[in-house]
Length: 399
Image (cartoon, rainbow, N blue to C red; front, side, top):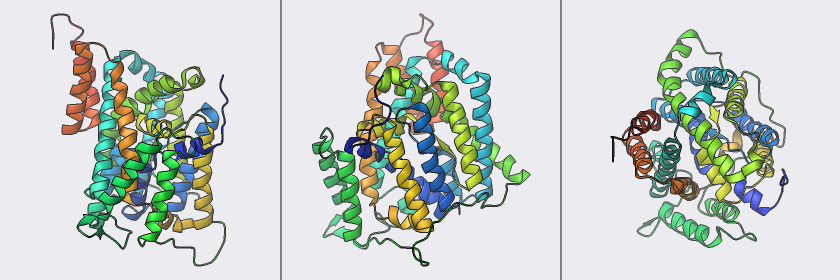
């Protein structure tokens, strides 16, 4: 059994690997939807620490992307988002405690899981490229490729593309370097670039003090909020969460950590996500989950133990307690193109999991899920893949 906790440069670099997924959605849900920034980032930090200590290996923490994307696009109220957190917690507890998730696992062929991982990886890479090019919804919302930088171009070259190109080259050069890990170098370089190019850290006006999160800082959702959240947010999110954040994540965790991931079962992962969403509901944060993409990001940039969880968790807790609402200005020091680079490499790592498929039918199912995901969404791709994979067991059908 390998050591559970390791604290070094590689673990620190790996702990930062998933910021490209985590920060844009969480910041947008604070600015657009009015979620409580102290409660949101404090709950992220606690979730990182508790899950890392319990599972004993690197565990990702991510926003629920279907809920997050729709909430930001439609400018939903905090009460509607909180209602979705509590309802997701209910569904995940039900799936975990009844063992329904194990039945879903038995019915899910390997090709479907790989298709979910391939699709998630492709979405991450596409999202990362959009961040570098300045065409993501978050950047369009701010009408700027690098919303927090005063310098937007260097001659005819957009500054985001320049930073992204340099960050990509640095990542390629340092990805397997243990003395100067790529994730750490890219994040520190990004923070420095952000400061030099005009982004500024806003310190609390009242001077140094501890900013503790409030319990229930936002109004409790009403019946209308719960009914809206159920149909508009939760039902579209559930298949994606079960497919990517439970089945695909558990499978990838076992592939990466072997016997050290013995605690990572589909039941425990569902219950873990349920408890995380209850915590988020109480503190006024966003719906959270684990995810195969997040794990691929942490692992590719060097995370191998629960030490990475403690490091990034303590970073979030320390920044939240020290800066309060000003934590947003700290994260705004990171250029969007740097977050894009993290997404591109994390997505590539996850998409390459498809390489262990063997038959033409398996590759067809994975490719079909990818195509449907790009045309619609991952939930529809997962459900369709399940149906097609079962049909292709019939020997008379060929591809």
